[in-house]
Length: 411
Image (cartoon, rainbow, N blue to C red; front, side, top):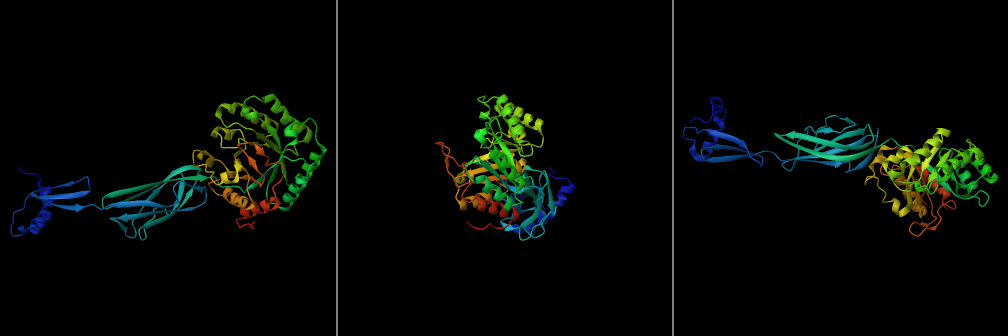
């Protein structure tokens, strides 16, 4: 019975003859028909009679070396992507092409090749959010691939200072110190949250009028404090709207640049409550800034009811562990100016570490404030916003230095 057609028999003739010769049958001119297959182990079997010789296919190993898994990059900023390729445990020969891909990115070079087993290219994300970078290579009839997940945030704005100025200009000198600090740092945006009597008043306070005017004269901006009761109805929408209108009526739009909505909910079930407040403020003036303070990362739907969200309000030690990648990656779709951090219980050195961290892609913060004053969230003991921090001027110096990309003077 003929196992192969003439063409198949002819194509295996040379291989069969060589194998027969290797088995001591070189003097026999008779050639036995051969068959070929690929095993699950990746070996090619060439069978001559009852004897078999195995030719192993190459084993490919491809792995990313940079960026780190889940690293946060910045849209429009080139980042190095590198992958190491080994063939049978040895670095691939130079010039082996590795194909890289991602949903929204530019590459340079587009099709990099290996040098000493390493392929390197520049990756530039063109859209924010999560992306998967893929690498694929083909060699010796085999294919290997690798995947690396990263995030990209929008190009950041400089850090700014958001001061919970819950101190009276009549009872302390802190408003004057705050104004002097803003005047000494004209390129640094400083916004104060004024809080007269927990935001409840009927007429303008002359001391506040004077302090706000002086602060505005040096470039400072002020937003009015309004508590919202977490949207439970403990404070009605009518009361909140009246509070907002009162700020504008007695202090005026030139001095009031927006509102700080404290005790903001984070549950999407309360969203409609805050949509109503947001619409009311923007109807008064679209330029009014709305800062919401849930004090934690809320549901992503809250991005639509505030221009800035305070996504962190806690101790300095907790801020070092802050990581939106753990369940809150939607924050990387937002500009850093949309996310604020209020940090208490922080020494001067801890303040500088926190400022440096806030500016990184992972933290993606914009407005920040740190203080050495203490508060215990578990017991409610302490008041971190009753005065400026002891290192007020040094904090301004630190934020300004980080914005310029230079090391701040150490504490």
